[in-house]
Length: 103
Image 1: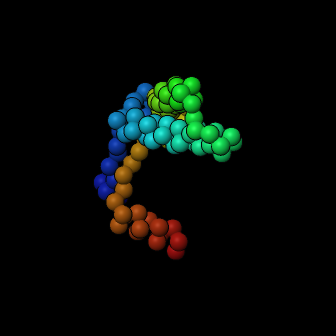
Image 2: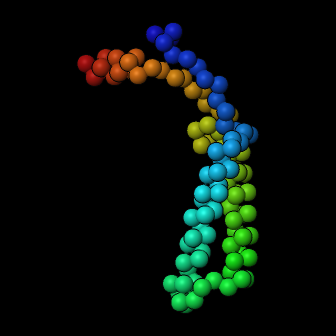
Image 3: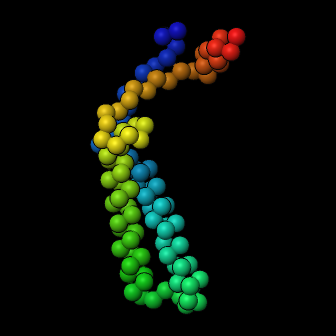
């Protein structure tokens, strides 16, 4: 059965991917939408230029924080721990194992 599984070298702690940057931008966009809505809901006015400058600063902070979080966690989300080994198993083998476990 070992021949059906392949070990994949984990890449987590200390690595960044381009997708991490895009995810941080998405998170920053969500926060900024909420920051725009807050003064509208609270006071009924649109954000001022000062509010927009604060939103830009928060965008940069969110992106940096997200990337630092991804740099400092391993492939299973543990902080400052070595990566855990990952084994890929094909679906048919996995289903066979499930059937054996249930019987």
